[in-house]
Image 1 (spheres, rainbow, N blue to C red):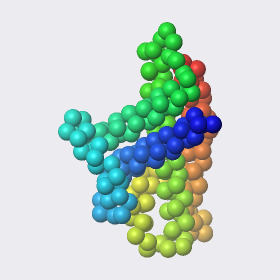
Image 2: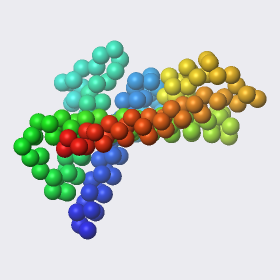
Image 3: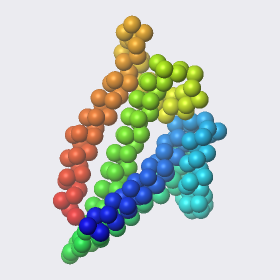
Length: 191
């Protein structure tokens, strides 16, 4: 009972911090406006670890690799702590177990990134109908534009309704359902 409560607390805190780091990375990658409440909150929450990491890990091509690497490391640390609490022992092949742990952490980041895209698409679609001139609109637009644009070019609007979000959500669901589940099961067997 105590172990399950501890695992819940570690998973919740770890996932929220990984989510904050990943959101910071995605907003920088998408060139979202820097002066908004979400960006300022994420910067205040994660600067204590991101700023020192940026001194060691440079960014290339406008991509903040320090933040992405930190998100991956925190996800891996979270998995390691949870497996340790459950009593997992790596056995005779700690190198393979460590590689599998790193791969599972990367898959967790991909899953969280897909959820971020899905949430941004849904919120943007709702806001476009309810409150199109919201302060969140430019932020959401910059995050969803790379995913919506290919569909907006090819899929015509029907009665002034953009169907691109529908197709993005379907592809996100397919990515979550098929390849990620299969990869996670395959990598999980290596542990």
